[in-house]
Image (cartoon, rainbow, N blue to C red; front, side, top):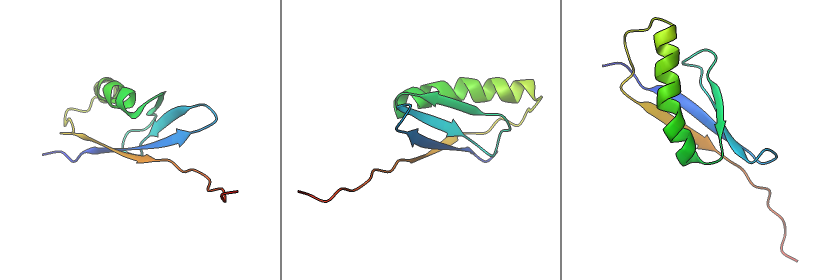
Amino acid sequence: MARPIIVTADWDPEAGVWVATTGDLRGLVTEAATIEALRAKLPGMILDMLEEAGVSDIPASIEIIARASDRLAAAE
């Protein structure tokens, strides 16, 4: 069984979107307003990119690692 494609999703607070990238598939960069929208978008994009690259060993899954950070402010 093929290993999963690991996708990192980082929250961009200025743009208000999740930005997804992966080192497993060259050129994959996409964004979505929610993690749910990103999860819906990624499978089709990844399958299309693998097909274009001539890859026949399709990964069994996509693993999304989401990161977001917020600044802490002292209570007044």
